[in-house]
Structures are given as structure tokens and as C-alpha cells.
Image (tube, rainbow, N blue to C red):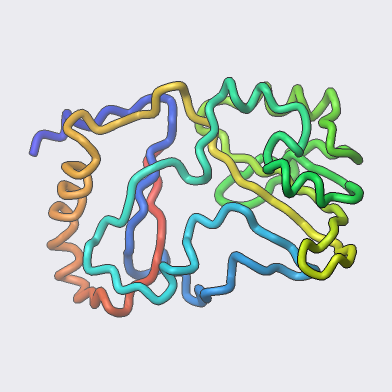
Length: 210
């Protein structure tokens, strides 16, 4: 297949694959991304809980941005943390302790961040997100207290949605996603056969094209 069909724009193309060696998420558990210490909630889980026990007979699972895609114009329009959550959730929040906008580098939270003390973003935080270019990965880390909708008790929680900044039109394969997945699957077959990869022992992983 002609390789010319790959079209790369400013956005990062992220290919979700099941691979071997160091790419394994060795201890992926079904509840890994739902409940964190002190009722921490990770809103974005690139590896869905259901994937933990799934056998990937199809080599390529999906293709897309690293985290939840957000268009640049939509990111620039954000003025408060409440813009990132639904109304029902916002109404349960009692108080904000801190909100940090953090740049993600190599899948880790970096020290490049701006922190505020309320749901409304500070001027520095607004400048921070406005300066975020296409393909930037970032998170809004919010420590807050909210009312439990079931018990009525006030709890300390931590919400941390993750985003990847994308252009108005994302990068795409000229012959379509399914053709790209087939190409990657077939091109890697000899390597997988040589490594004697057993699909029943594989878990989820990511490969990035920059």
C-alpha cells in the first residue's frame, strides 16, 4: 500500500494498539480509573475499564487523539471549571479548594501549570490555555467539596479531566480510518509473528505519531 496516503496535520495522530514488551499496562484493573484516593475521580480514562479483561483479536483497536479532543476555539472559550462539567454536577459543588491547569508532557503532569482558588479561572490561567497550541495535552485538576447525591453528605473530591487540543478539522488518513488500521495491522504482522505474540495475553497500550 502506498505510504503517501498518510496525511499528518498539526494535530497528533494517536493509534490505540495492543502491543507487547514495555508498552504493557501490567497491572490494569477494572477499577483503576474510577475511584482514586480520597474519592478522587479521573474523568478521562483512555483505557476503558471494560478493556481490562478484553482479548484483542483485532490488532488495532482505535485511532484518535491522546485524550478527550477539544477544539482550540472551545478551549479558548472556557472561563470556569463549571464550563467543563454538566449543570447537575456543578450544582452539587459546595466549595473549591484549588483548580490547576496543567500541561501534560510524556503522559505525566509537568510543573508547567497555573493554579487558582475558585471555579472562575484566573487571568494567568486564561492566558495559559490560550497559549496552548494544537496537540497540547493538558488537564484541569480540581480539588473541591461536593454533596453526595445519594447520601447527602459533604465529601472531598478530586476531578481531573484530560484534553488534547485539536484543530477545527482533525488529521485524517486519506483512504479512511479502517484502511489505516488494516495497513498498520498487516505491516506489523511479521514482527508480531516473530515475537510469538499471544493476543490472549495482551492488554491495552498506545503508540503515538508526532
